[in-house]
Image 1 (tube, helix red, strand yellow):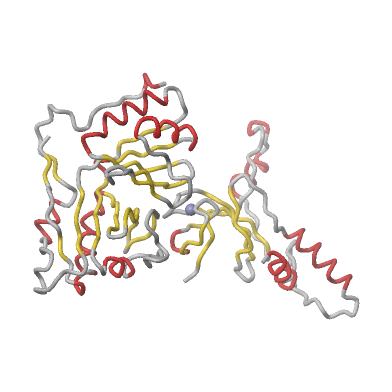
Image 2 (cartoon, helix red, strand yellow):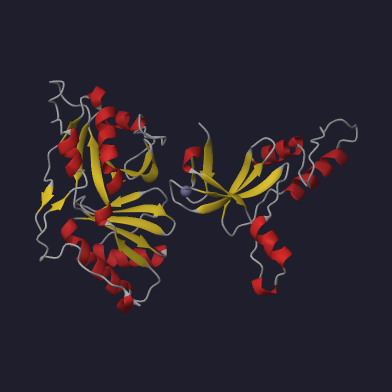
Length: 136
Length: 224
Ligand SMILES: [Zn+2]
């Protein structure tokens, strides 16, 4: 059994009740008429596919039927947080990268932080784990 | 705004057609084992349909709807997610369905009057009221093993200690979804869509077989 926290129902619910709905925080261009084809095409069709931290929209389809956001690690599949529509994530790749950098600087005797080898803006699993711990 | 909303009484007196419950077909086709009959022993789970109730969906802001409902019906919206408020005599209830959506259930003959009074009270407020009475029905499940029948059927935690009285959720049930709620200690209520009522009924008969499930005979026809 795998549970996801719905920020509207305010409780953990069975994963079967949810549907993923793709990348979150995609802003509609302010003036669609002023967009060139590339900008409009990017908006409509092109999505990020990061290795590491990803912000996604999910739908509590059999439940309150509201959309909400999930911050998820695409490597470990771990869900790091869920938050309502209109809110901003508290955990981001930049945030984790910064944490990792600080951790690396603090632990000068090297080899303390494993290299996650993540291609994009993602942070390593170790940094993710430390954030998770700090939040708990 | 209210002028442009077409409101009509779905149970108008001049209607001469006898209403049938969404389960009328199922009772004939799949039967209605009387409680205690099948095994010769007491049924540990009993089904009972409460057909022809008035089901209204309220959508809009919680504050404005709560105020109108208190004024018109004397009960307020449940304040917490996944909760249910029942009035003093247990005939009227409001359930949280989503942050801007509630299900109001009242005796069938009160539906139109209530909708009219709510609309009058709400005036130009940005709300929606939809009479969905014909689209769904309410199935009661009682008996000492009622929660065990539910445990076989839904992913939600229906342990009576976790699913306390006054809880109500929309969740998966078998291969469909239901609104599941617990108005008091002895009863569970399933609100099912008309088109899935037969499926849910037959699922309950099957799942409840080991508990000697029976069907309480209530008024199944409503003359209008
Ligand atoms: Zn929800």
